[in-house]
Length: 452
Image (tube, rainbow, N blue to C red; front, side, top):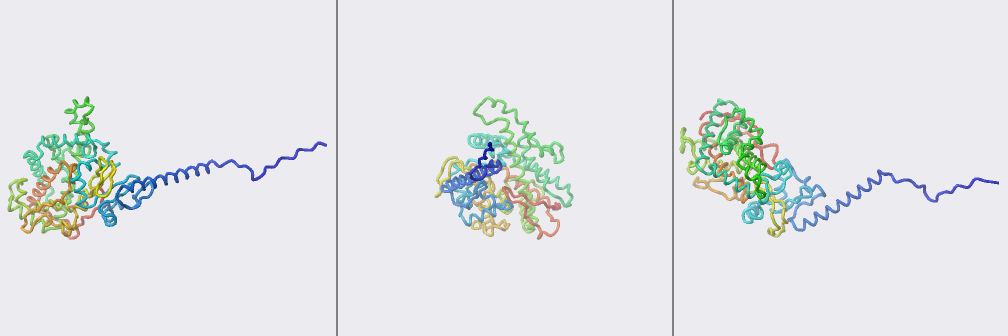
């Protein structure tokens, strides 16, 4: 009798094909854990050499521990805990922060040859591509900075010709302000045109009327201006060691416009707002102007030596407004022993300006606006090594001389011709702005320019 064969039964649980999604999840989890431990080990290795600081999280570093609405306050709080030299991680990138005059001076002045590289900031690198004079590196930076200084001197920097251009622009500024007829005015646009026109007069040997369509276009589309400067460098394209190509030239022009326009404009706007808030300061300024210059003579930079109070006010405006509180990042160009720490080549350094300008030992009541910070007991102007709004060392602002001339002449000329009147109660004027990051931007406001 034929019977059907008995089917074989598998021993143990039935075989099931592995879920492909489960395998993928497991593999991803393994990779994440692997990268997690690699990151921890790598950061721990780096931290053994660098100054102390808050423990970073894998991949994101200390980003979550920073208040990006007020970075200066965050950095000061960290300095209280970790000291004047500490390390932060922006992602996996270590950044060494220098907090205070002594360590900043030691780095940028005493060891300036090592700390003169420019640190990497992605938002700036994407914009500049390492070109120009502000964000370039190494030999490129040396060539471009040397060229920029030489060219500015050839165009009259530090000479009477530059002063005459600033004086001319100050008078044009007065005429524009007269057109407001004492009515409430937002000064942002007008105060931006004045320093921009000074740069135009230096680079292009011409200035523009404030309502000129070309000038307004140039202010918005600066890149198109620098094509006018391409011809002098068409000999350099065949020199493989030269950094004077069109892209570098254009970005250098952008640097000069950006640094020479916005910073001066913002300082002027902050200064007028502070004077509105402190009417006693305005009264002293105008008394000194009336006594030294009078109502008709055009102010000159030579007047500064006879006007210590105005000079002190200009310095105090720059100190108090703290326009670039974090400074631009530096980097070391070789391994260096800095105090008791080792900083590897390429380490990004933030030599903060805010704690220097707001140092309470150098400036009594440093959080208060007070021109007496720059006056001695006899009312004479008093210099301070802590005054470094333009930074210091080899990477300091190359337009510092021009900016200081502009600020003195613009402030003096405006207050020679106008009395500033607030719109509303001066006691309610606020200096607060919505962001305090790389720069402090003055709040929007209105004022009246009443003929003096």
